[in-house]
Every structure is written in C-alpha cells, then in structure tokens.
Image (cartoon, rainbow, N blue to C red; front, side):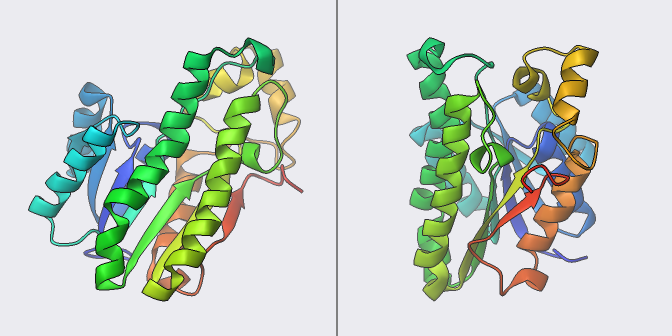
Length: 246
C-alpha cells in the first residue's frame, strides 16, 4: 500500500500506459481521478477499478480549468498528477507532416504539462508538497527517424520536467518523468507505421531486452517515483526501455 490514501490524477487513463498506471495506483491504495477524452472507454475502465473519472481534452485550457474545479470541490488536495496523455503523428518525413498534425502533437504532449503547472502547481506550492510525473519517451532521448515532431515534443517534456523540478524543489514538490520505449498500447501501430510481423520484428530488434514495454511496467515505475520511497528523487528521467537508450 505504497500510495495509501493519496489522491492522484492520471490523464490518458482509459487505455495503454495510463490504464496500467491507474491499475497499479489502485492496488497500492490511491484514490484515482482518471481523466481521458474517450468518455465511453473511460467510464468502463474507471468502473472496473472502482475509481472516479472526469472527461476532458487536456489540450484545452477550459477543460483543464474544469478539471481543477472538479478536483478542488471533491478532494481537499491533490497529491499526485500524472501527465500521461499523448498522441503521435504517423511516421513520415518532417516536411510532409501537416501543421494540423504538428499542433495536435504539441497541444496534447506539451501544452497539457503547461496547464498542469498553471492550474495544479499553485496549490502544491502553497501546501509545500506534491508529486508530478510526466510520461515522456525514449523518443525524446534517442529519436527515431520519421517521428520527428513527436520526438521533439517528448524532448520538450524531458526539459520541462527538469525545469519544473529545479523551480519547485524549494516548495518540496517533486517532478520526475518516465521514458518508456514503444509499448503495447493503441499508439503502437502508429509508431510502427503498420502492424505487420515484419514491422514488429524490426522495431523489437532495437530493444535489447527483446520485448515492448507493457502498461504494468509503467505502473510499477510510476508507483515508485510517486511514492514516499522516492522522496529524495526529483528531476530524473527514468528509462523504462529494455536497454534501448544504452
């Protein structure tokens, strides 16, 4: 029960890594407010975990503000915020990525972290405690070709994590990130540019441990970094990647 009675918000919680993190947090005693844009799936998953949910598009100011108001009304304080929501564009040369695709990637992957800082950090600073976990990617550390602007958005998140950590450390607010390799999530097909055995084998060949990340892997890593066991760790980027970045 490493997170007993902790109140945690997890974005992108209806599937993939977010769902895995929500499941692990639930098992470790946390009260979780699950956030996602997919209302139908979110309701189903939150019901299975017997947790609370809030439907929101985390790339929009008004939705994040509504999330804050809901959380303030229902919970006294938020202990943990996990910025997991993320999207990618399909593999293609950088000059062929449309402006619409670029904006969507940065609005979801980067701007949502900005909104977290804007709306949730002030209370954490006031009470001098809290944990923020950003779900980055190995793409931000060792970019893959043709995922150019997705790579850049995750590199932004890694720098943002360190910048947030150094600024918030005097307020006893910790900020870390996990950097998974491609995992068994709805985004996997997009990363690979298809779902054939040939594409899977080529992708797996870049991961020394020989398998994709799983939601369980992310849940375990996130739980540690958000628990009191990690209360001396801030500004770190934990690679959960089977050795891909070695």
